[in-house]
Image 1 (cartoon, rainbow, N blue to C red):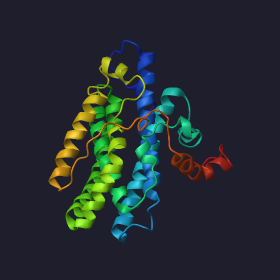
Image 2: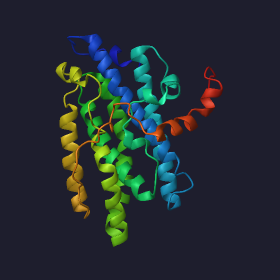
Image 3: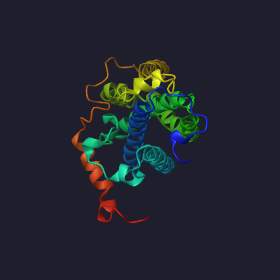
Image 4: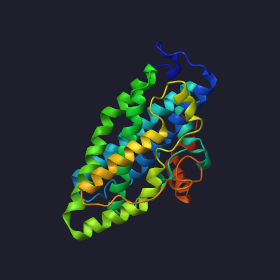
Length: 267
């Protein structure tokens, strides 16, 4: 694939320059989300509650980082940069990930709740992209969907298990939900000029509809597990406003340390 805009069946777009910029912003935010949450998941390697979960979450971390690379390659095809420089060569304030994903892991309950909320949000987002008439964009989304369904299965199995196990485990899960909820609502917030994509017909379902679908779905599931969907609105700065926490700078410093020793190296 030489780039999303090289698709042979691309529909007519009224303002291709604006659409390319809006698509770049959307894909970059998605890539940053996957890279950052993948790194956070990887920090559990050797520390998860049991060996099966250790192996599973390590595999999910690899998937997320691999998905990030695929998305960075699409962005690079749109603007002539490189996937490595997008992943490793930007300052923290240039990242577009949702703030929830950069938060330190905390305990297992927070990690599972965050993973579950994000996995369901990502499923909604990918479903919308898979329906795009821009064939190459739909193909990328469909590729990611095939692995993401296993991520949902892992986080949902753990969430249900802990929600039903004991009063204490349920209390911890509810507390983690209360902590994560407002920033989770921001995951599906709008990226810059995303309305250009909806007006051009390249994105059939916009952020507001995606967020409403996600909220209704997770509320139904939480209730079925005996948990209470928290009340609240998206956290200010919790989405794409580049208002990151100090945790992101520390994460990126660790993640890019090898690359920074020789940015021009071929791996």
